[in-house]
Length: 284
Image 1 (cartoon, helix red, strand yellow):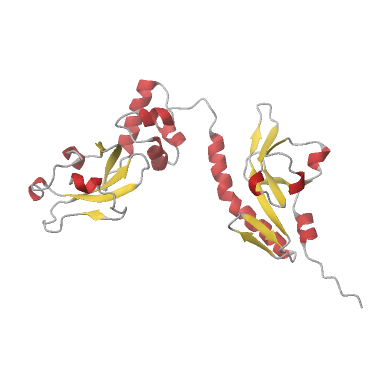
Image 2 (cartoon, rainbow, N blue to C red; image 1 turned 30 degrees about the vertical axis):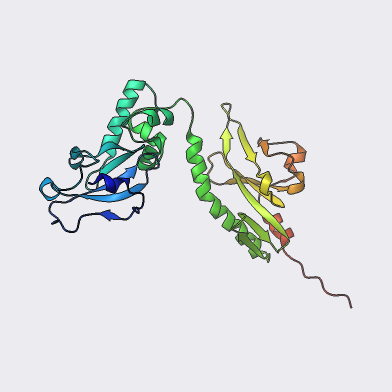
């Protein structure tokens, strides 16, 4: 592999670097991936020594033909992966060795370790850093379950939006989603924002919800969907008019003062009814 090839900034992620004038014999294919962003820089075809003796000296050491390896290129470190080989065992062994030497793991510790993929690389390959930690036997003291819960709520959010749109339209309202502002327009009269709030049980078994309003783009009405204790389905709903949102953050318990629970509803049926347009006959 030529060092000029690897340094080229114009190679697309799907480009294949090859020398067409040479016979293609026992070619090995590798992906060159940025260690910082874990994005594919190019695909490299490595020929046998006899077929590429006149090329520039290789940037990636010769041992990369036997297994994935790490190398330095300019100011960014690159990682070469063999297409036919799974790199996960090597990554786990490297992470296991770092854990044995440091006694703990974190994104900063991983990023500061020379010769080790970045923390974003581990997160991309294993789904999350927490899963990579568990595979090497490390359990962080802090409870990071909220990360997985937030991901699940982000996946659930479009379904909740569709359900509310369907409920409004079923009652005759003209409702559509404004993708630019991520809000719902109802009858061309007001905007509606939908916020899903994670349930956080306390050590004593009480349930708490922490609401964060986007005051920079506050809709006319904000529908706060409080999730149940398992964060799998809506528990109840709060309808907050923009005029009554006094702060960016709000903490709710299961039962609250009247000035908060006055906005609480078990379902949105009442809201669907009052937003439906009503035809008014003209006076004779």
